[in-house]
Image (cartoon, rainbow, N blue to C red; front, top):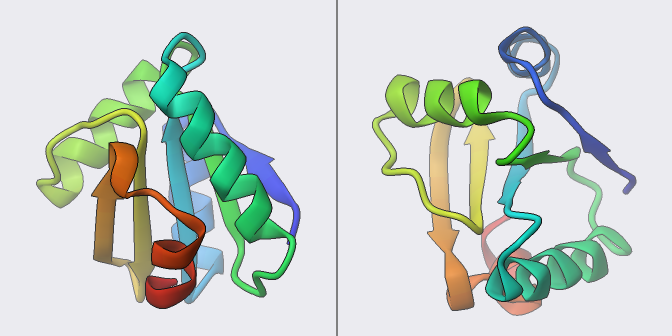
Length: 106
């Protein structure tokens, strides 16, 4: 499944409305751990049937903060959040982002 980059609260709200479930990666463009997590997310995308999205925290700070505030999930970067029926059902961060953890939880 293709990973779509998003950067606005409006885009995110539309994604929530249009998708029963989806997975989002909060990715930092300057962090080596985030680079590794992004590579694993991209590998996972090769076999995933779930809609996948990514935000770059440096370009989408307002969106990142909106997600943290709306869902009461402490901001991390890198961080993966699965949303189902408009609510977060799983999240993990940093070195816990692996292809295996994504396959098991998403």
